[in-house]
Length: 284
Image (cartoon, rainbow, N blue to C red; front, side, top):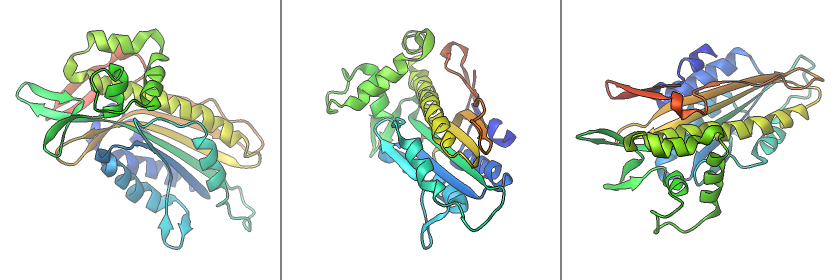
């Protein structure tokens, strides 16, 4: 677990967070492992999905078919947590519990939520929120950018309820965090800050529902992880910044413990972004 916590705010290769999460779960020696991965529909996010599949799903999840393993996935515009996803995920993977073993069985459920942001290297330094897509600068995450702009600057995008959902979610963050970012954060960092806030906001929604879902597993001992990250889409291999890690347990016959969330938090006034050898570190 500490290996995962040490990654909070630090831009690392895509494998780092997934491998650290995998090691944390492996140490618990769970009988059942279930996972939900939430990503954006953007084609730039294929690396994020592929790494989670290879380095977590293939190592820890039960076989769905002979030789095939898969996470429960939610792929949508803007990496939005969709209500009901955790309940369905838990219901599905709980069926993998071996019925012939009479031991203290442990279920471990993992939710990984990835927002994302593109980066362009310019003569004036890195600019977040743009990605060189097929040789042309393009908004990335386009859905997040459209939601923030109120779709005013994205006339080529069809109007969709997803943008309103994202905007409403950001508006729900206390202390007018979204307004602060718009008015006080340099344009080169603005979309990065929004991606950090968005990922953590979706993780909070997932955590609340995951609590309710595992509470219904009356006789099971349960361990839960909710990890929020921001994938950084680059011309070369993508990277990732872990922005929050939430952990809680449930004893057999009991209720879930109070979730403990460690991360950058939802107050962008506390964020401080620095670069070391072109890699980003955010403190909060």
